[in-house]
Length: 267
Image 1 (cartoon, rainbow, N blue to C red):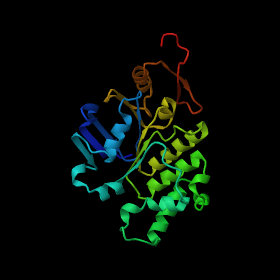
Image 2: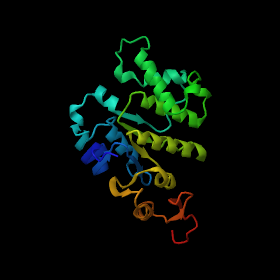
Image 3: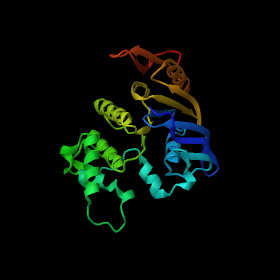
Image 4: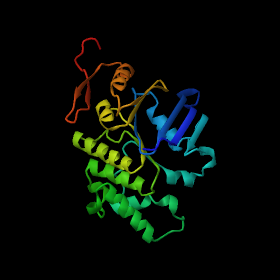
């Protein structure tokens, strides 16, 4: 895994009107890393993700991609490098899977393009294969399950061959098996060098699959922990951030299986 930051921010501040939501945040993410953003409601997770993606302009501070200041990168160039998926992307579109994924190639296409090129077909096929949905290419979006639809949107993002994939609570409406399958897919994508930054509410998922967990509280990063090498500090810090005791048991491969201590009378 490369230690060179694929994305970095320094003293990043974001807000709405007169209210500061993200307060002087410093963050670096390297290629091949899966980083989970966790924190209570209204801690600023989604706002931070949108600021990092370039969708929302920053109020102050510095943001760079592979050492290049975001202010020097055109919108089209940024769209090629960063893919952002919001919470619950639409399934109410009159498109086939292939058509939607093809739209992910828009940063590379002229607005006058009317036919699908050979390179577009290749990249769409590659993206569908990477999420295991080649067989569903001609299905319509409204015919898919929640887990299948989420994978299609990831393929849409991958069609542009980004360096960074950002996802805002992609597991929130999935059952537990699809949550696991989605996180496994993201881990596989990281092996290929993609950097993934994901907002999650589920602490157990984050600790099971992320390389790092970043704890946000009241707009500030209060913890940034290396889950792979030493999960205990992350568990302790997240207990404080969520103001609830978390318990850990060994899972089937020896790592931590973490869950809230729902019945702890001291919480």
